[in-house]
Image 1 (cartoon, one colour):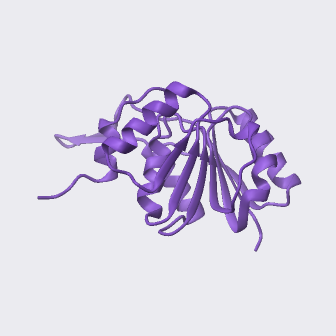
Image 2: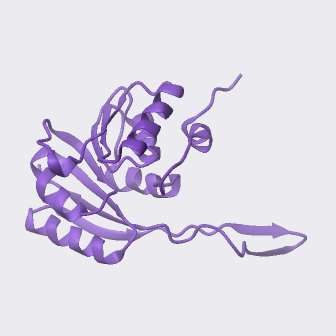
Length: 193
């Protein structure tokens, strides 16, 4: 019998706040090349979808995710225990209020004041490592881009990922009239080797 994959698991998880959905998580993979063995720091765990998605990809690598809201952190911790995701650890702390240790191949941010986190966590990004910052507003993405440039990151770009489903039946084809189009903006930057 086929076992569940990460997409099956995400559909069943208890979701509290807005989540970085698979279409956007897939773009993070495509733009950064994240793969097995990477160390990932995630801030703004929320419902945990992005951190669980990345833990699946980097296994046996590790994901460390910070969430300042206790209710969100507890929910995400319950989900990773329920689904046996052993290479992901959720910490109920504000990443801006602590001294983060270690070097990471990828740092993902989905939180208020992302630009401050980029400035603070730049020292934790390994040479050749990537920032991937999810923002619902373009103004925040532009602020993140500016901080990335100030910290000498390269390959900086902002994208919007719009996916449109199509309907084709009875000889007629057209876009499905509703669905998820805009979810947010992604800003990427790479630390030079």
